[in-house]
Image (cartoon, rainbow, N blue to C red; front, side):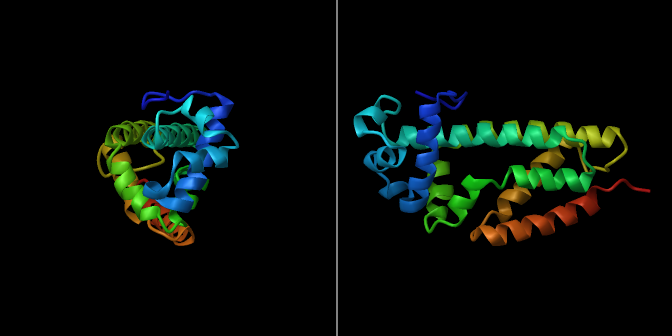
Length: 195
C-alpha cells in the first residue's frame, strides 16, 4: 500500500493512478467504484485489491501521487535558468498539468476538490509544504541574485503565490489557464526588482 510519505514506482501502480484520474473525473468520487477503476486500469477487481484496500485508499494514494509528481515537475521547471516572468510561467505550467485539466473539466470537479481533498487534509498539507519549499528556494535565489524584490520572506511569498493559484483554480480549465496567464503577468510586475 502507498501512504502520504511516498509513492511506489511500480508501473502497475502508475497505470492504476492514471486510470483512477480518468474514472474519478468521469464519475466523481462518490459514484466511482473499485470495479470502475479496475476496468479502466485493464485489470480484475481482485488484482486491484492486491494494491489497494478500497476506493478511499486509491483516492488517498492518488493525492500522494499527484503531489509527488507536481513537486518533481516544479523542481525540474525551476532548475532551468529563468527570468522572474519565465520562472512564474514555468511554475504555473508545472502546477497546471493533465490531472488538473481532467478535474477542472469534469462535472465532478468541485466534489473532487472539495470533499475528496478535505478528507485527506494530512496528505494535502504535506504536499503543499513540499511545493512551498521548492518555490521559496527559487524565490530566495532570485532575491539573492538581485532579480526579484519580495514583499516578505521567500517562504511567505511562496505561500501567497500558491494560495493565489488555488484561489483561481475553478472550471473550466481553459479559463483557469487564462487566469494563470494574467496572474503571472501581475506577479512578474510585482516581484520585479525595485530600481
